[in-house]
Length: 369
Image (cartoon, rainbow, N blue to C red; front, top):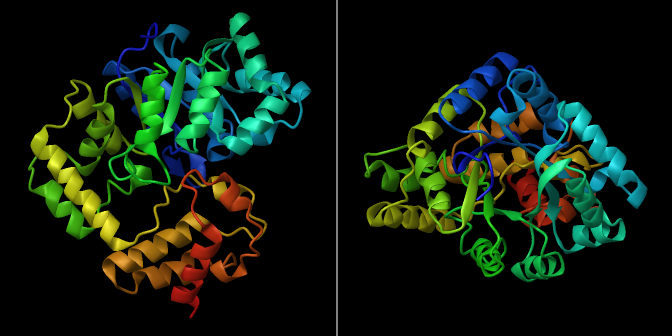
């Protein structure tokens, strides 16, 4: 489908091994080596990942250690880094420099939604990216997308030059009326666009399963919870790449074990993940993936994903550990849910379209009484 892409499994670099707030280069080097030695070569990043540390870590641990033809590097153009047409090219050039490469294999218009797309159009960002392709500075042009299927259809109709679309797809969100994974997937198929999958394990939610859900996976006596989630996503027609954000070698080796010789879910496995879906829908959990887009612009520095995790944990396990983490870890120096000023910046960038302001009221009610 695309030159030099070896397998349908990619290394998502939004969640990397960390130590003391910095990327753990020793662990990251080992993970990259294992990934490449087992025949995989696709790496995905963006300037905002890990506050800019993701691009730098890829330069130091991948680009400086491997010949350019050994890996596929995807980067993205994010709306918060340009306010005018004249700022797009300098930002793009700075990304090339930070990563230490002369070109990106894939360059995606990041987190497209109706509002973000309007900003990109105003700044002629799509047209400029296509110029970068003509200049050989990107090999393939695409988008990542977080909105309704009708918006995706409009973008693909207006820009048929788009070569690949990155969407959220996992077995819990597949039929979700808000995320619209299936509807977006169907739009990609109608436009004959290869699909890149992000969040196949829903930010770890499909790895650390509630006890009531895990029993359906355990009875299979096969792979890890992550294996069924990633294989579910990779099993659809037209899936070009499935990304996994791996933060340690254990996760890397587990993913390699079932993606090296990929097999789609069989009927028994598919029934099991549908049972897990039923459990999630019945628990009324907050479907946050901890992408942390919401925290960057929060004027009160509220660690929104961590507070949501506390509430989910309380609902799952019904113990006091969540209360401790809320008070003593995540809000000890401020950033309580009750401090939200309801500015709405978080909701404007949430890929899950969560009513964050209202959910923070629920968090405050539970933990602050």
